[in-house]
Length: 238
Image 1 (cartoon, helix red, strand yellow):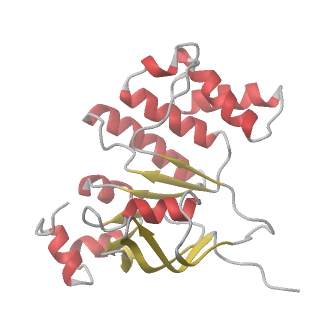
Image 2 (tube, helix red, strand yellow):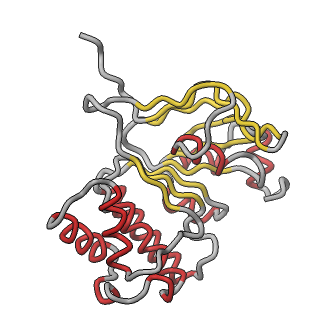
Image 3 (cartoon, helix red, strand yellow):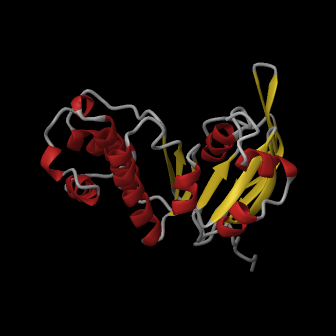
């Protein structure tokens, strides 16, 4: 009997060319169940491209993205973006639509949508049009919509970049609670304080290549490359 994979998703020598620019250059990264991963790097380093490629939104120009079968099947996954797309319907219906598209039938769909809203503290806004919610509320709704799909891996691309400190704290609380319940978190951020608060490990990407992967506490004290050290000192443009 073939041995089951011990990873959820893996990039193997992945390159991505976008508009004549090599956004990823033979990047390799294996994500196992467990730690919260924060991807750091300067502007244009390839952080968002890496997440979108792992998620399946971008096809590699070269290399392979492979999904493991920890439980005998590919891992479930979802992604939340910096600016979530809200449909022209209520907060509750936004979640219900995502569940319907993913084949969840009634009455389970209604139960899961309501539970997801409660999970992020938005039950009172269930009937409100999603597009009139505040930025922080919309991001929590996007997280609820992703969580309702029961992902094993949740990719988050700059999920608090445009939010004020209070809304950021609410979103961070939700992310931490998802991770505590077993969802594998992989996120990018420009906020080093946020990376310190949320990361178990840091993946550092430079010029499209994954150059370092280490425990978060070690990275911030003793980065393993000159590029990472300069980045932490603010000497590489964000």
